[in-house]
Image (cartoon, rainbow over all chains, first blue to last red; front, side, top):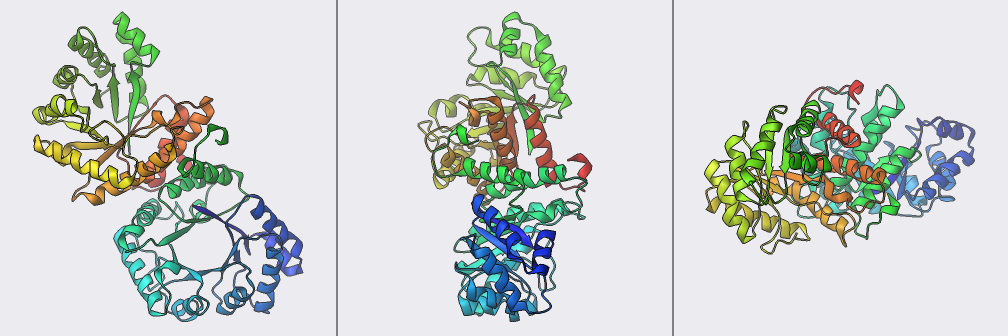
Length: 262
Length: 262
């Protein structure tokens, strides 16, 4: 399991302020932290941009790439933002992402074909809804892979996101059980391994305090690691997340274990 | 995932002393604790008994059943101890267990057929060794199921134990990765669900302190729960184990989630 930091997000007040002031320093600081904690990639989510879209994404990526040499995940619903990002990324970017919704198939998926980029595919049905059970999810995964292949994007370029939901949703635990099962089964359903990604921050929505949220997030990190999730998108400044992430890697690593690292 | 307490074990000094003195009180106290923490079952492991085998197991089970109304797991390599235990258990017992080793097939497995009891099958090869990879493990599982069916024990009576190993074994993490994968795959390989069990205490062998051991055990509880393990055999007096166990159940439950219980 590889760590993708979700900290460079427009909902992070530090990021919003830096964007408004066109101040690269806070963005570089986030990037430096991601380097420090050995993040595999950084997700860049600036929300829907109204003006100077290409300028803004260029400003952010240039600020970040100075201090972080990993991959960038271009997380946007605006095709021109992603396209501009792809052009200036030093490492192969990951597009985040498409789904079976018509507008995504028409505007986002073609970028993966054009630039031969990795792309996240959300396990949402044609109406943008999260399927409830494992079987329906696997069926949606098949349709996602087929839709991508139709546009010239091969399965090895797809990273499926089965979408963790808030625990407090009605049937929230049922959805997340199905998500775990889906991740475990995806490699066996297709003839080849299909990579998977999950965004951790959703599950804790509505938590009454940060301790409970951290407890639930850490538990999910272990559960997702055991399910062979490929990429976990999470808050990389949260110490309890990092501790759980590093321990999960240590316990499941293909290398000699030592208690000293626990 | 259901909790089976491993505390009534001859290696537990309290148990050893109680046995020697034929004092039922400490055994009842363990049983009361298991009731308090809602354990599904108690594993009874008295080691190889030299004298009065049937008297000893009768004494223990009678002491325990006074204070614990769940199932008992009869954990012994001595067929007469298990047979006597089966006769006096108030709830359907679980025999623990058989493997492909010839003496186990000849002495322990027939008890499951005779008493139509659930039985644990260890994923060990004919020489008593733990297979290294997932494929070999699934092959051993097939042979276990076939050997049981040959003696009239159907697959629905078998609970497979893929044997967690100490993390510090050479390739220990590799073995435990394969174990997790095996648990996830067992239901799909056979035409029907095959139950699984794992004993947690092995992984921490050689830990330099109890905090590190507890940390690793808690992580494995989450990883095993996410893998759909049916029964976890663990120290039910360890608070950190119980916290992780209860949280894993809460996060994966088929019921409405509330943050209050976290």
